[in-house]
Length: 342
Ligand SMILES: Cc1cc2nc3c(=O)[nH]c(=O)nc-3n(C[C@H](O)[C@H](O)[C@H](O)COP(=O)(O)OP(=O)(O)OC[C@H]3O[C@@H](n4cnc5c(N)ncnc54)[C@H](O)[C@@H]3O)c2cc1C
Image (cartoon, rainbow, N blue to C red; front, side, top):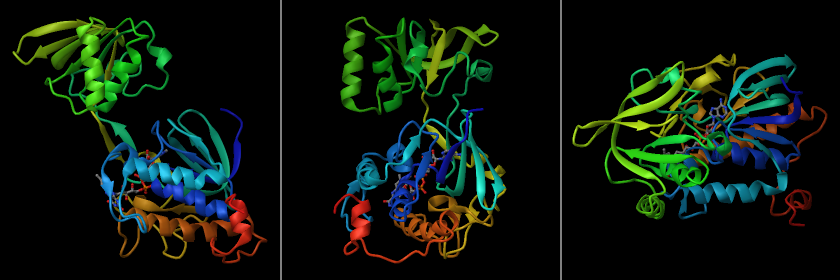
């Protein structure tokens, strides 16, 4: 295990509510680290609907999921949070009053005075394709995410799927892989048209292969893959030689390890008070889609409000001797200084 990273506040989840929490905590001088399982910032907005319009963000008549994420990133820039992507918070342990030791699945350790759980619907987890025995190859020959492209240098890759992830990784990995075969169940792709055009051009130039069909069985032993049996749209079965498979069948949300952190759960949500959005454990707050209280609306604007009130109480844990003075950003020169606008 690595040496503990010390921070005022650790935010679990880089969705819109986690991002806005950085802003509210920053205005009150609290330093933040933000951890997310995904390889990108923005939670559901960036992962599930980056190009869809949102019409109910106060003061912004229309913004896309990705647009909102980018605007929030711009807004929190003055507070310079540290992001830890591709890492899942595994455990949260109380070691002081309040002080928490928080660990990620990559072995990173944080010591933090306050924990803000902004984990939305829980952890995004890849959907496993219905191929018998695929579990035996996971982590050795079958991967649901690309953490480091170099891992796939000189590999015979079978990439499965028809969405943006499948197409993006096909285009990014084909220059370093030995050979890439893209497999999709029909010759019609959900991915961005430009990516599909680029992929078809590579196929036409003989630089990669495209197959239409579905994987029905895997060939190999002891986790080492040699090939995949593919049933085509004409029901003919053929073998694609490959040593690595990257299936991109989308993500589902599961509560994941939140259930083991010692905070009270109610129907897979975290009950909180409505003064500070604190859980039953002092110093652990829950904001956004993950929390519940009478009248809760799972809207981004609710999570923003929750972040503002949470920050007031969090400040009392981080700076027990400091009195929080209520100020407007419009008129407070000290807040404007923190924002770098004065
Ligand atoms: C199609 C669609 C359209 C929508 N349209 C609107 C709309 O118009 N207006 C509106 O207000 N809302 C809308 N919503 C809902 C809105 O997106 C959510 O309310 C919002 O994303 C909640 O934000 P959040 O920050 O609480 O959680 P999320 O956006 O879910 O982010 C949570 C993050 O936490 C991470 N995480 C979870 N567990 C862990 C862990 N253990 N370790 C590390 N990271 C973890 C996840 O990977 C995720 O990135 C829509 C939702 C969908 C699906």
